[in-house]
Amino acid sequence: MQQSFRLDQQLVLVTGGARGLGEHLVRAFLREGATVVINYFNSAEAANKLVNVAPERALAVQADVTDRAAVQAMFDQARQHFGRPVTTVINNALPEFSFNGDARPNVEQLSWDDLNQQFMGVVGGALNTTQAALAGMREVGFGRIVNVGTNLFQNPVVPYHDYTAGKAALLSLTRTLSQDLGPDNITVNMVSGGLLRTTDASAATPDEVFDFIAASTPLRRVTTPAEFADATLFFASTWARSVTGQNLVVDGGLVKN
Image (cartoon, rainbow, N blue to C red; front, side, top):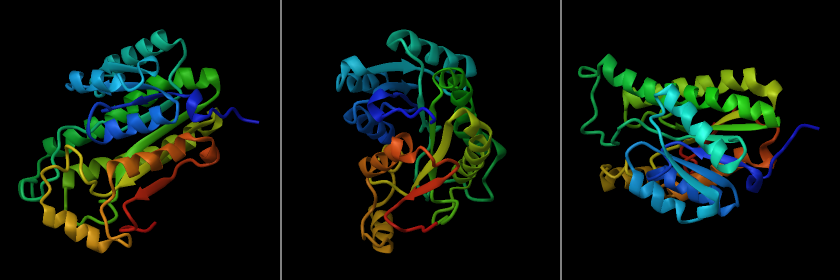
């Protein structure tokens, strides 16, 4: 029988956890009794305020997820503070990005720098956290890695070329990592949202875009960050102990796998 930890037994690291979708992910895990490391890059005040939700079960740690040494130091600090290794990683950190279709680089303006920024932050960040987590996960015989994706590579209603390419590469990494890490009882999955109403990144989205998407979904509404966060809990829970390499789309039924 393979090891399986309940949510309230897990030490969860949420990257980009101080604000936006990350804040909702942190709150969801804390609500279920998990102990949570809130990674942040610039949002120290928001991260420390979030710690106050459950001071005995939360720790804010600054780290740039693209910096492998800083990520390793963050994992070491978490282990020292809580006396146990991180068991669960939620790769949510997003390089600076705004979901404003009018301001995005179109195909004539798109540069490798645009693409590389997303690859470094989205794929490179997830690789760094995964590598830093492996020793601890193997030590306890349990690991859960959940990557935050997007439905845009299935339905590019707005062609955010750089962002979508980075998330598509992250889905590929999700599947190959699941194959590699399965024997260690480490599952790797993705939860993909559509446009969420509302996060810092989607704050620039015009209301008419939200309304158009809402009208296109079976539920006739745009998914909220809290609803997305709740779905993410599934992959970390005991209910998903035999699920790996999967991509769950949480967008009110707009895209169907």
